[in-house]
Length: 343
Image (cartoon, rainbow, N blue to C red; front, side):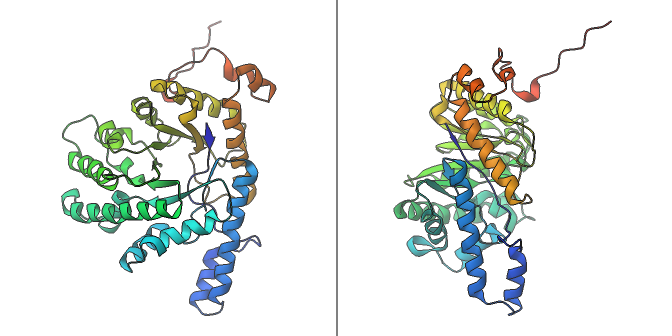
């Protein structure tokens, strides 16, 4: 059982200055490049520190180094800034120096990057470019592993745009391209834990064969924007991990009961067990302030800890006792409230 925060963090300095303003000043040559670099390094240190202080098990740099991580990766690939001394390895190393926790490296996925670059083309027209991107990123995964990275988060939000499942003749080519891309990415062992990250909607519509076909060790599913992703969780083999993106990061309300329920439900599917389950946020962190992100991190860490306890221990630690009543094992999106009695 573990906890982590997923996605972009707010790119704001400790003094409340958006990094976009500093980047504009650098472009206008009114601020030195070194000053921007120092501000970014300071922000990365604070991002990692918040996660460590909250007790999260897996941390990232919050993808704050660049205003557009996907664009930064594409530029690095175009410049051949790859391999052991390349962009991704340097980015991971800078964060890894700040913590002895597992530091995961987020990576824009090849399928979503390809749709971004060639958004006016069909899957058939994009196929060569997409598979080429997968080959580049497979090499980058191996370079990260050689540098000591233990986990990479492959972000594929555009899989939720495919749709069509189980209708056999809808978006078949897109589904096949997504599946082929992920299999190509992991065709050979990469030496680290690869997690497929799906946010912003339902990947169930793309079909379990496409989403789960490649040998990922774990999956992070958004269960707020994509509640049908519970269907996928029930299809994930029990020897693979599942991270439940179940926290509304912007909400101040107590979400511990929902988080603990989600963790235990995922653990029960296919005999997975809590040791292969994680908790994360579903909604974005990017527009939150630092205090709100800190509260989200603390809530995830606490929910992860409570999920590991016995029911009595969890209640003693502050879990709402209503969360451990005889559970309704149906996923939240198919539950319906009981009708009120007449009278």
